[in-house]
Image (cartoon, rainbow, N blue to C red; front, side, top):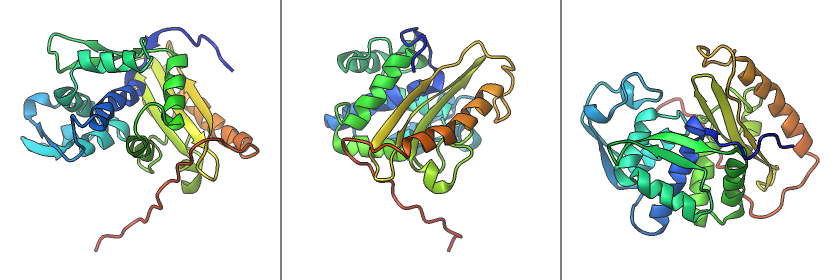
Length: 256
C-alpha cells in the first residue's frame, strides 16, 4: 500500500538511518573505524536534547564512533548527530546518499559544515534505502549486520510498531522513529523467524494533532502500536527471501 510515496517531507530522526549509512560507507572504504574516538565537548552537546550525552554533566569525554552510532539509532541521541558530523560533514553525507541513489534523502546543511539539520526524505526513498540495506547493496555485509543489529536491539524504539510484543517478536523488527513538532514517523523492516526480510514499512505522518505529546499516548503512535502485531501476524504466513540476519541472543544481567 502506498500513499504520497514521492512527497518530500521532513524526515526528522528517521534520517538518522541515512546519516549512519553515510558514516558506515566511510567505514567500509577504510576512511573511518568504529573504534576510533571522538571528543564530546560541552560545546557540542545539544542542551536538553534526546539521548544520554546531554545527561552526562561531565565534559570533555571521548567515546568511540561505534558508541556514537549506537546512541544515534537506539535512544535517538541528538548530540550523536553532531558527533557524526565531526567525521562526516553535511556535504559529504549528501553526496554519499546521492551516489547511492537517494537524492531526496538529504540532510540540511548549516553555516558550520560539520553540523546539519536532519533534513528530508520521501516515503519511497526511505523504503528503498531499507530494502537496499537488507538486500546487501547499500553497505558491506559487516556494516549491514551491524546497523540492523542496532535497530533490532531491545533498547531500540519500542513505543510504536514494537510496543505490544514479546522480546522475541521485537527482535524480529528493525525500526527507527522520527518525531518532532507535529510529525510522528516510523520506518523499518520485519523479518521472518529465520531472519529473512519479509516486510518493509515507511510511515510518515506530519500535521498531527497534540504536537506537545511525544509519548506513547499520542494517537499516531497508538495507531502504529495497533498495526505492529497485525503486521507480524500477516508476515508469519510468508517466508522471506534473500540473506538472513539472525538477531544475537540477549542475556540480561543482574550485575556481578
